[in-house]
Image (cartoon, rainbow, N blue to C red):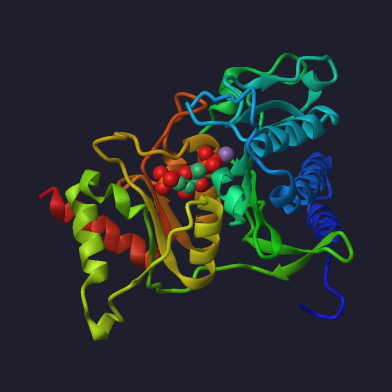
Length: 338
Ligand code: AHG
Ligand code: MN
Ligand code: MN
């Protein structure tokens, strides 16, 4: 980092100044996400002391997954910080069965919609491994002044105006895009502030890391099975075999592959016909960042950002990585279907 690094707060103000007519509401949302992230980070740092799984009153979310106490905590922090301000009219979260409409008259004037995966990879907290938060921001499509509508949270990913993630790793980072490239900020714990550490992030042209839960191999489509075997085959010319790396936190797996070059895959399988990951608050924001960083994200056929969402918790097969590896993936899928 340079000697006088730019803080995330300064960066947000500078970005806003490029748009003299901007209301500043998007900047306020980003600032509130930044503040909420610091609170969640602080709690995660203590997780090995206080534990993560509630011993009683164990609850499942709508996906049938056990909610950990940190899932519930992070969800509450991000929802409360949005409710306490007046920029967001509607919010969708992995941990809430239905979308939330902030229904008081003040929020009827709010222009923005927020979608979140409050804690991604949350089971990794128990073993002190990286987790994340994913966020996605849209402009509302329903008329200002009235209540938000379900269509506000069911916009296609192409309509996102900003997206990002917080990675609670060996350092805590906030990586985001407002549609003008991807920038990464690292939390300096001695200052309590995020500083620009990874400006204008771009995927390397080529990569040799693949990230997939290979335990599901038998259930994968044949094109994906062949691609994995191809990665494992010796070929000095293309530097194969490639390296397999899988953390089981989408944010952490994506972040590594963005920096080093690689592909993340969560394919459909016979046990999970639509894969596992959720379109609106996992795949779309990550796909937005991937495209902004010069990479690609698809369901194996179409860009993730062009899929038409039908439900808040809709799942989709998900493939994301540098363009060269994604093009090879599409070739393997289409060859297997000829
Ligand atoms: P979450 O903790 O938000 O439910 O997300 C977990 C997701 C994702 O982060 C990860 O890549 C994937 O689930 C791992 O799934 P498998 O254990 O099936 O590989
Ligand atoms: Mn997740
Ligand atoms: Mn989650």
